Image (cartoon, rainbow, N blue to C red):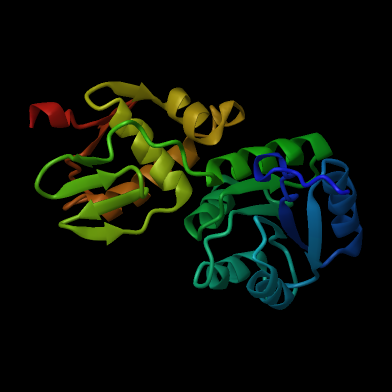
Amino acid sequence: MVEQIPDSLEPTAPRLILVVDDESRMRRFIRMNMELEGYQIIEAENGLVALEQIRQHTPDLVIMDVMMPEMDGFETLKLLREISTVPVILLTVKSEEDDKIQGLSLGADDYVTKPFSPRELMIRVTAVLRRAEWPAPPPRTILRIDDRLSVDFNRHQVLVNDERIDLRPTEYRLLNHLIQNAGWVVPHETLLAKVWGYEYRDETHYLRLYINYLRKKIEDDPANPYYILTERGVGYRFVDYKKI
């Protein structure tokens, strides 16, 4: 008689990661190291194949090179964001901040510069997958900030004028952490560590970019924000809604 494993004890399926790079040697390098850590890997040699793989297999994460012939990683990412919110880590030989900002502004979740060590990539993968998971909701279900803005923590939804605003997981985590500390200034390093991970505490351009994303989505006038306030040189503060 075969003993059935209770549902709560069933092994968790390995995370599926799509590796996109025109160099087969790089794909093998990433595959070998990721499989040693228990991940399942599928591959694509260019952007078009990558988009098809995403449609067919719905991976948990995409690791994609920027410098690819015909359709580079930036163009592929732009098309990808039209069909999926899957987390994406870009790989590139460039290290200029403008290139990082371009990738992040197109919807990348992280950026790793070649050459990189397996350990560095693994840390980034773990952090991105962790951020992609919704945070546990606080005790209250719906928080109404004012007549314009409200947050449904159980559904992980933000409503502006009673209309749902689509937020990516990182945007939601950032907003959630700011709201939980409403009225208090949260330092840059704290937000980066709490939302992205401790290893990101010096990556201030991530924070600036995502604050701008949030302001464009929830503020009536993003250039003159009401909800998310900048404390120059220190951090950010969400309006103290209890005093509104």
